[in-house]
Amino acid sequence: MDKRHIIFVPGKNPKPPADQHQRLLWRTLLEGVRRAEPSVVNDLSEHIENFKLIAWNYLYYHLNKDISRDLLWIDALINQHGPTEQDIREANAWHRKLDRLFYGIVDHLPILLRLMPRVLRSTAEETKCYFQNKDNIACDIRQLLKQELRPMLVNHEKVLLIGHSMGSVIAYDTLWELSHLEDLPGKIDLFLTVGSPLGMNYVQRRLMGNKYRGKKKYPTNIRHWVNISSNGDITALDRTFSNDFGNMLDEQLIESIEDHSEGIYNFFRNEQGLNCHRSYGYLVNPAVGKVIADWWQCSA
Image 1: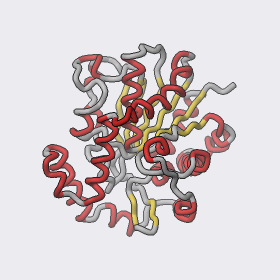
Image 2: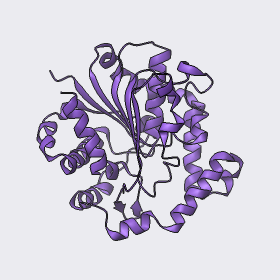
Image 3: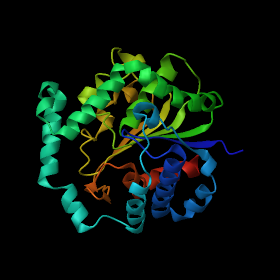
Image 4: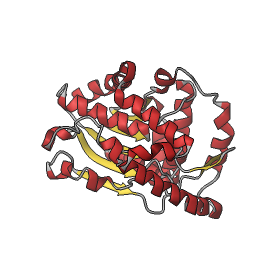
């Protein structure tokens, strides 16, 4: 039995039914690996049972998204083998840079949130519900991930934990709880965050462990952490984690923290235009595929 596991924790918003969503994520993940390391993809493709989606979104929204809304756009994404000049131009457009500037100001002065566009206010409210643990929702969500991770950690199995967007916050908090509230043995090999808001002041002030200092402030069950963010993704407001979480290195809680954010483009498009944040666009990117491929080979 293969003891390698890839666990994916998605970001916010309603998703397709779990089985359908998992197939779409697996398809784009394989494509990203194929673009980065073609020699690895055949072996990986035979291990779909090693890929697990933590489908928390229905628990949170009580709603599923119609999968047909994504299928054509994912086909187009897979058939496009890199960003076009238009993609690069739009990702670096002045209005995105202006949004990033305003978002950064609000991150330090939350009172100004009411002046932000509706979509950003909505995102902030959804994030607030998680941190306030309304109706115990955050605990219930983290429990889904804990159920998967507990036996893997106890048995010292190989784990790649991928957190996209809000999913990276859920994963981080879960790892902290497993470290300090349950004191489980074992570590995950690699924590891969994509399009993550973990660099934001607003988020860091509310993470599990934020009230502590020293080793208790951080998860102690991560060997390596790679953070990837694309140009134009304002959810990944602060794209450098090696400084924000550098004390984990100082305390020898983790072996490495790497940031990859230069020249990376998420070129997912749908009827609303370019979306530099979508998980499918991150997964097909060879920068993400390379990290996954390297881990798969090294953990064999």
